[in-house]
Image (cartoon, rainbow, N blue to C red; front, side, top):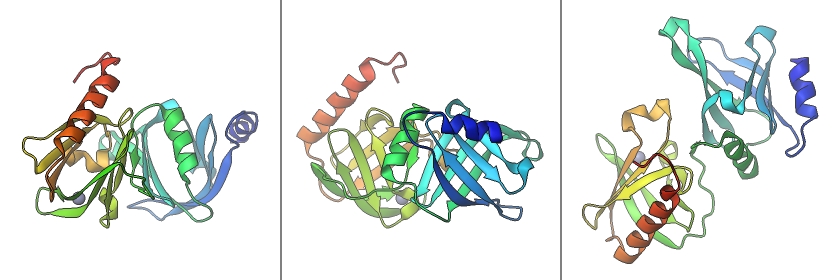
Amino acid sequence: MRLVLLLLCGVAGLAAQTFDVIHKKPHWPNGQGRIHISEEAIAFEARKEKNSRSWSYTDIQHFDRVSKSEFVILSYEDQKWKLGRDREFRFVISSGELTDDLMETISRRLGKPVTNRVVGEVAAQYELPVKHLHTFGGCEGRLLFTNDAVYYSTEHAADAREWKLARDVRAVSSVDPYLLEIRVFENNRRDFSRTGVYRFQLKESLDPEWYRALKLRLYDLRAGQSVIP
Ligand SMILES: [Zn+2]
């Protein structure tokens, strides 16, 4: 752990940020400790040394910002008692918060899609009242569009999302003006049953001009990538 802390202190860029956290464990007593987030790594310093971890960003499979005070790291670590299922670590912050700036840094260092369930004030250029369709029923809210992102704002906090077009959105499709499907690269095992497809019933018809412009922007963004869906 001492080595990790030394490394964190020596890194330029983001000053390492430290939070007191509770490590939530579904079948075991919760743990306590501190999280250190820097440009180099995310490290958990547990009260019990054997529970401490340090993940370089390449060792993080997925990062899920559940709220400003809660996040989940999906590691590549096997859990033998769960037949090798990758282990996830859920932390609740008890001092400070995971700000937008810090989330931006984590996302940039990860360099891959993330789950961000915090939707703040958005200066939307276009918006639609919608119902998000679940297997049974759904939740209601608004889709907010800016030039570089789509947001789903809803009181059903677990489903609120920020999707950056360049980072998270695979494709959009609309088979009729009252239906919009957003396919995302979200590799979030906890929402795996949804397979990254979000279907929205639109309470107002989709503006064809806006939709066309959105598709073209996505084609442009995807054109440079080697894998074309
Ligand atoms: Zn929903």
